[in-house]
Image (cartoon, helix red, strand yellow):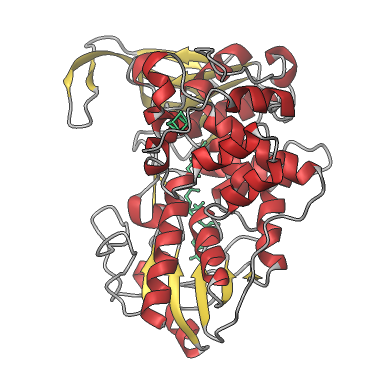
Length: 460
Ligand code: FAD
Ligand code: SF4
C-alpha cells in the first residue's frame, strides 16, 4: 500500500520547448510509476469510482492487475467497457468524474485513474500487441451509424460485439470526430486515435468517409439500403458567434475552423498547403477547453502574443485546471473580466484591433456562477491581428432539417425519450453531443454504448 497523499507525478515537456512544437506535453508513466500509483488504490468494495464512470469501467479491477504487474489483463478489463482507453486516459475530465468520488481524495489527492488507464493502453500498444479482441457471432442485420466521433465509435463497437454488420458514415475525409479535427496533437497524438479506430475497422466495421447524411444521402436512403436501425452521432460542430460588429473580417475564425485547419488539415506542417493566419497577436475569446486548445495551438504556430479574453474571473474558467496551468506555463496571457464589443478592421478588411469592456462579478446566475456585469465607461481598444471565437457550439441542423419527423429542441439538439437514445423517428436512435450539446468524450461514449444495447433489444 502506497500511503502517499499525492499522485505519482507525470513527467511533462519543458513549457518553453513544448510551446514551439506539437509534441505531446504529458509523457506518461513508466511501469514502475504505474505500480507505485496503483498501490494507492484501496480497491473499495462499494466502488464509487465505477458508478461515476459513464461507461462503468471496472476501475479497482484493472488497478488490481497493475499492482500484480499483469498489464495485459488490466488492458482486457478496461476494453470490456471502453474501446478508447488511450484516448480517454488522456482527455477525460476524470477530476469531475471517477476521480471526484475516489475515497483517497477524502484526505489528499485521488488515485490517478486516468494516468493509470493511459499507461495500460500505451504499454499494451508499445508491446506491439493487437488492440482489443472479441469473438463475433454474426446475425446478418445491418445498422448504420452517422458520425465517427466517440459516440459513433463506441456504438459501433458494442453492435459489432453483438453480431451486427455496422457501417459508419462520416462527413469528413478522416474518422474520429473531435478527437481528430478538434483536440490538438500536443494533448492527443493522432497516431493514438488512428490505432484505436483501426481496431474497429480490422474487426469489420465499414467506414464510409466523405459522406454527408442529409446531403449526399438521406436517412430514408439508408433504410432503403437494408439498414434496420440508424444511430445518429453527428456531434455539436456548429460554432456560435458573439454577434458583434466585425465578425466577418479576414482574420476572424471560429475555434472549430481554426482547430480543423491545424489538426485535420495539418496547417502546422511546413509542406502543407492549408492557409492559416498566424500573425503576431492572437486573441481567443472564451474560457473552455476549446479556447485553451486554440490559444496553445496559435502560440505553437508562431504567434508572438496570445491572449485569452474571458468575461468572468480566472476562478470561473470552465476549462480543465491542468489545461489552464499548462497554458499559463507556456506563456498564454489571460485577460480576465474582459468582454469584446467590436472587432475593428483595416481598409483592406483585415482585423487590426478589438474593442472590449471591463466586467465585474455580480450575484450567482442560473449556472451557479457569478454573473458578469459591464463596468460603465470602461471601454478600451487593443491591437490584435487574429480573433478566434470559442464561445460554444450547437448541433448541425442538416439532418433534422431533412428529416422533419426527427424532433429537436430549441437548441437544435435531437430529443430522445431517455438514455437509450430512442428518437421520435422509428428505428432512429441518437446520442453524444448531437443530443446533449457540447459535453465530453466519455459521456458521448456512454451514450453510444447505451443506444447499442437498446438497438439490439429492439432488433432482436
Ligand atoms: P463528435 O466528436 O463531434 O463527432 C461527430 C462526427 O459526426 C464528426 O466526425 C462529424 O464530421 C460527423 N458528422 C456531423 N454531421 C454529419 C453528417 N450530416 N453526416 C455524416 N457525418 C457527420 N471532451 C473531453 O472529454 N475532454 C477534452 O479534453 C475535450 N476537449 C475538447 C476540445 C475541443 C477543441 C472540442 C471541440 C471538444 C472537446 N471535448 C473534450 C468535447 C468532446 O470532444 C465531445 O464531447 C465529443 O467528441 C462528442 O462526441 P460525438 O461523437 O458526440 O461527436
Ligand atoms: Fe480505488 Fe479510489 Fe476507486 Fe476506491 S474509489 S477503488 S481508492 S480508485
